[in-house]
Image 1 (tube, rainbow, N blue to C red):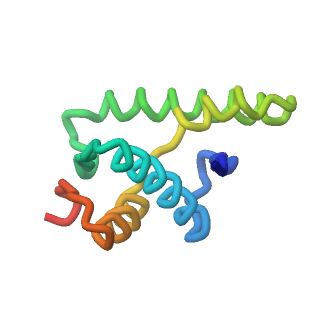
Image 2 (cartoon, helix red, strand yellow):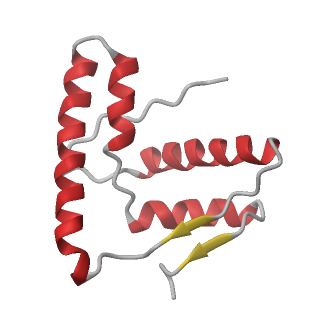
Image 3 (spheres, rainbow, N blue to C red):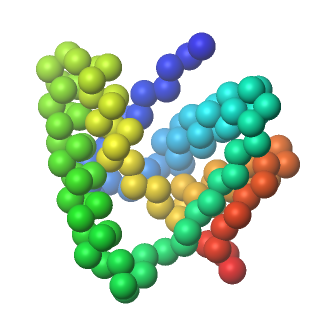
Length: 118
């Protein structure tokens, strides 16, 4: 089984098409694992930021930035396994990333619940 390590991203960097494909590939791999074990995944995207959740979103961004800094430090220190744990915690799924995943998941008849495009 091939390991997919998230790329090093900086807070001002938007995922490129190539990187988005890696995230979609990684996510679909997880879905295939679930399906292999006879588990039906339900993927839910809750849409954009809400004014009432502004403080929550701010706190989440702060945690993602902290996790990214720690992950980059661990990766530079030659500890990729530990860095990966923190890379997973710092991913911010954009609307475009969700859209790309929805397109691929729809092609394989995976049920998608989303209000992104409602």
